[in-house]
Length: 150
Image (cartoon, rainbow, N blue to C red):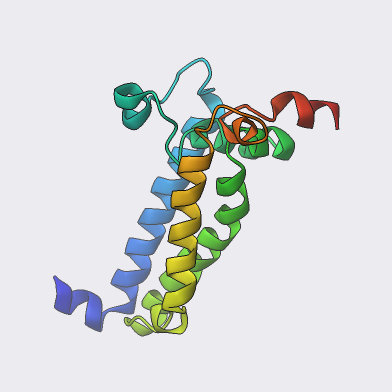
């Protein structure tokens, strides 16, 4: 199977199109199924009562799909900031693989940058659980009243 993908650009493009269709299907599902009504539970929050760095991401993505950027920001501000960069990486990596069959993107990303982002995500996960202002604003929906009025 690996040889097929190394040799056949059409096979790589077909896989990328399939992945794109799956992502589009997931986005369509989320668009029509409000996570407030149909909640997506977080295992970390259920087990510990603490918010993980991804808590509120489902509601934020739902809001983004509906063009509600301020509401999305209130649910998970870090994800809303990082998602364009993640999408750019996935698109560049996928196109590189489809065209060349190789990986020429990952080597261009600084390891220091990746470590800094990981540290930022870990700090965000800790800080959003501090039950005092301004940190409590980072909890899912914590900024909702502020961004509604803006």
